[in-house]
Amino acid sequence: MDTVSLILVIAGAINWGLVSLFKFDLVAWLLGGQTAGWSRLIYGIIALAGLWCISLLFRKGQRTSHV
Image 1 (cartoon, one colour):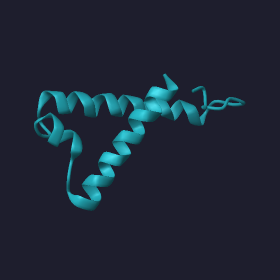
Image 2 (image 1 turned 60 degrees about the vertical axis):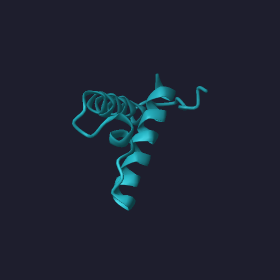
Image 3 (image 1 turned 180 degrees about the vertical axis):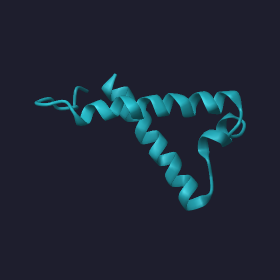
Image 4 (image 1 turned 135 degrees about the vertical axis):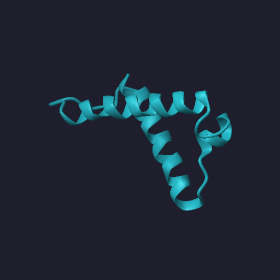
């Protein structure tokens, strides 16, 4: 779960970078716009992954490289 969450958070960060630099939302472009159901689902999944990754900050004595 940690690895999948990190991958999704990285994908979200790349998407926000594209929005910032080029005003290009890759998720919206691929899935039919920001308000399309599929886009909103992906945004929600990435948000949940980000919340999951918060737990990585509070784990003691564990490394996140379980790959």
